[in-house]
Image 1 (cartoon, rainbow, N blue to C red):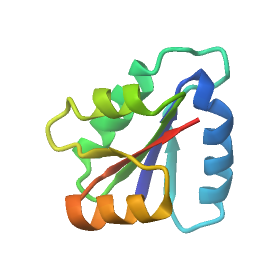
Image 2: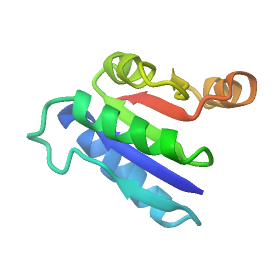
Image 3: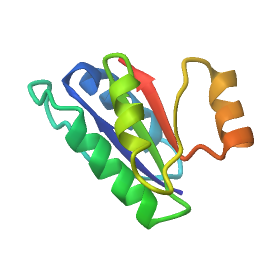
Image 4: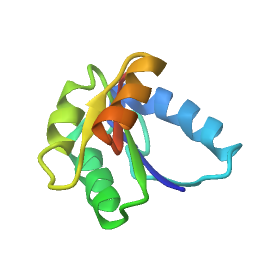
Length: 108
């Protein structure tokens, strides 16, 4: 499975941890920014991840920002993207199983 990951400056550290975790799994992982903790616009990574997930129906996305609200709203602007802000494993499972979510949005 291909996974596209993006974050703003507030989510940069959590994104690095997630990338490290996913590197140990059998996934094709793509980091779409931010590439350091000074990049502060959530829009660019949200747009980049959404466009890549939309191109590949089997791909998934993970977006991280301070509250996860901005990333969720930005991602859901794209046709074919079903972004869900989840704060528990159960809510993530339900978003995927019941709502066919393809982008997971996390708060920093």
